[in-house]
Length: 185
Image 1 (cartoon, rainbow, N blue to C red):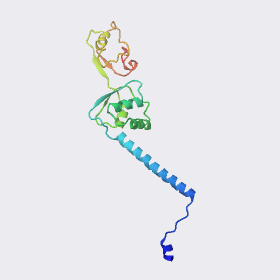
Image 2 (cartoon, one colour):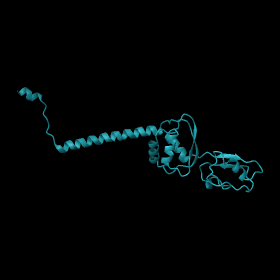
Image 3 (cartoon, rainbow, N blue to C red):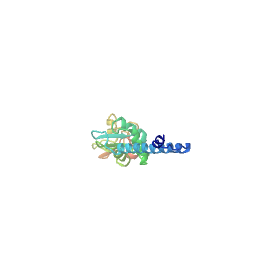
């Protein structure tokens, strides 16, 4: 009989408070590990190569924020996850700095590179050469049907002064910031 008692390990007495504290600490450690894993996954997606197979041009409309831009980027297949893009933008404090205009996005660009281009890069500007002798209204009336012009603002009047040799067009940028000669989108 003494052998039986000697072989059995002694069971320690349990204290309810210690058991609850032990369970709480275990949950805390598991939660921290899970949060670290989520952050690691998000960072690898944000800084890793993107899904874009070839260079593309992406247009950001005037007044667009980080949420609407992220949604359009995901819909067009430029980024893989809009929620990670938005979280990265908030973490880098760039959610209010999105510029309007057309931006060139290289193939395989990471979400971080795309965000940097949309916040720090320069939009593409298109140059239009107007033949000598045309008034400013002539090219506007001839080109209103093309995709470059957004007909939200009124074109220059047809009897306007002679035009310069070339003009710069900035789609999706308010006319007041694009050029002082004519009101264009």
